[in-house]
Length: 458
Image (cartoon, rainbow, N blue to C red):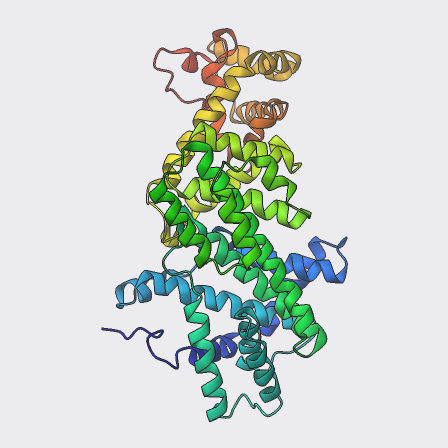
């Protein structure tokens, strides 16, 4: 049976050594150049931050689980390693690679694993160890064997890093707090790397500001998830005890813990959460992560969705933007089933998608008059639908035109913005099913309502 690397007390240094040796600086430069070309409006400081978030999104960490190759999955699941350890190590590799990529983005060629260890020590809030590691950087040579002192420092950091991991899933009455905390950690590691490389040293004051921001994000996340939980059901004594333990386990500052514990006594309103959000970055993070929590707990009631919609509205997120983000969230999990989040129920994504479709059906029915009016005002579309409903066979090009114009019609209803996304056309049959028979192709006016629209409509 393969040996679990995290059980070995010297596990961390070989891991970051392997990451540093495999890092491709030229590929990292190419990714940054492409990102800069796509976002010429961003100044240098904002560009680096956005690039880091872009890379985390590409790796899937926004959704709690880093993407991996099939070989990696096989190695970790068949070779005797526990899946939770696989996620733990994969998240470590994401953070380590992000540190090196940020170094390249700031014009600094990383010299090996020591810089990674410095940033991980800062993430663990061990400033003294970070300073000692930085001091050792001058004497470090990539081709030499790590010194005894470096091994000892890495061993200490490995214990610290391992102790703060969220391997238990950190459930808050079923809500996957682990996912969001893992994302916050990865973002924080990137921000600390920016501070470290820009200053060329361990700047305790600047790093502490980054860590304070991390605490604030986690506190607001817990507030929002408490509100999401309370929106659907009353919290009993036993459940309250579980939540208290989870709040304490988050290792937040004392004042933040007191605030959260007070919130257990009465329901947290969306207004309370929104009022505490101070910037656009936190707003976007909160909306996305609360939707993630609602998706992955395997259940979502109308009350929970109402909480999310109210919170988004108070934070200035338009309904069409909320629909877009929700669709992207579901699409991610449907496209990456091989290495999904290991702390969630297997059927959660499928069930959530069905509930999303049910909401869309209601939105279509409630806005039917508006949709029909838009179709009638769109001469080509009304004519094509009429011809199809009369039994005339439309060409493939005409069916594509029907699809394109129906998507334009759907844009007039904010909650139907999902139809405008790539792949959203697969939901177009929902519109057909609720249209008056006079506007339907005959196949959709049949009693069973299950026939297709044509060879190219979906």
